[in-house]
Image (cartoon, rainbow, N blue to C red; front, side, top):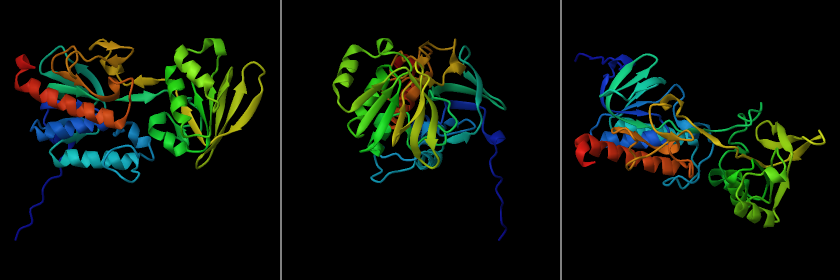
Length: 323
């Protein structure tokens, strides 16, 4: 019996003409791929050089349905990708460098290839703003967090700190205080310059477990394998001191990864706008996940919206007039 060796597919084997191209490979992009593949749309996911989204840097996830035990973020993304591939999704580990939504089919260009797509789902996600301190990235998921809803249960009965002074910071502090023994809310400005709405401020001020530290910045994140505390500088006295902590939550904002689409699609504050269901102002271009969602920013809500975008794209491709 003759052994037949099959050539392993390469990037060049991927057809340039696509029913649907999905840009991004986080929960929104991979869920969209699963649904698009099941609809026989033969989706192509352009995953980027660092695929998987924010969950690739999340050590433990305990709030994604279907996992009674804690699952590691990279493992969750790996399982979703395997599922999408099994159903027929193709993946390309390249970065999208440009798009042309003025022509049809739409044009999507990477640094090595170009693709014609009848529909596009944008699922490029968002990145939390960081303190940009040396040890911060190393301890992300090991005591340093950017989402109280995601990680607050891991800070049970420990002292924690929240960095920020906007609505998001106060909301995170009020959620975190349900778990932590004490929460320090640290802000670089004065009390008078806090941006959060008065209702949130009043609730936080009345909570005996929340302590306010004004005119202070974090200068160092302390710890090796896990967060041990922070070093801070009082901007008025110029006094630097350490605060022991079991949790640090950075709530200074998010940056939607939409720079590529600036001037090519309608946005507000960098977030893509939905015009009809998950479709943008350009018929045939859909968006899902943190590029749209500035409120919830959860893996499960991103996945749900990825499902919606794939179903919307399928219906639009069947008959744009009826969508």
